[in-house]
Image (cartoon, rainbow, N blue to C red; front, side):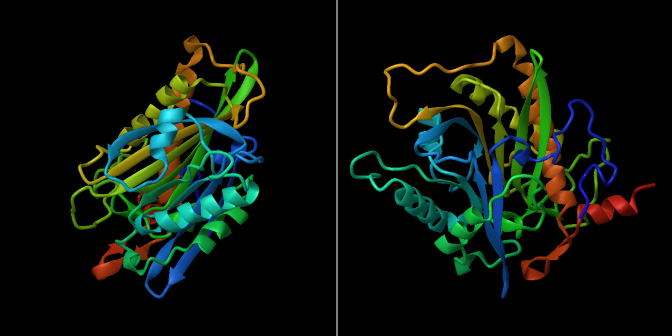
Length: 343
């Protein structure tokens, strides 16, 4: 399938990275495990924040709960301590427990002292409800599926649309799923990257606003906004915990540009992490030096977060294919609408 840019949507402002994906941030990799057939359209998407063990060297992180109608795991500790300890897994609502188990077992295998000689581990799993297409009561996602997504993680070009956790997701009345985008920033003569990956499952039919102002009509029945969206931002820019919190908040600006208003039944969660200056699990000294961006330059990552989030959602829509839903519903492809209305 084609990206939003390939389908003629114009994104001004900042340049994209080589892959226009979260994997443009060095060391970040993404993998999927897709489950389909027999009433299933679900799966797991894994985001590995670095090449090394995140329990031993914890990436600095922040979380923004835009609207908290969700069942994710691990967010409280990220908000409190400002670090990640595991990869990030995305899945359906009832797959959170299976994915958490997989992350815990993976961390224990690499660090046998977890829960005994040292602290426990904080598995980080975020979810959206894919029940409009998939039989969510089947509890189909298993720890083995989560491990499969982790093992499949690679850098470079990544699959988007109806894949992994995005297999059964919808947005604005269209079929949606996994989407990604990136922005390159130049600060003080050095290049830095911010990438976004979204699990898009939100937005009322008819509310979508394209960058050129058009409002696509999915010809879907009007239903209350009860979806969710997970936004994961990664960057190699050295940012302090407070700055990461401010940057991740701007993901909401990217969602608002699309016409989202974060309805009562929507679980809208944004996470951000930086690969710069991770925190040692067992520091050798009482004080650890960490770099941070001077605040007078922070508007650049603010803009990058909003732009990358907006384009990532549109890529999730443009790279998804039309799919029948449960109960006789049908979710068309935005790419089909764009091609039919290209004139």
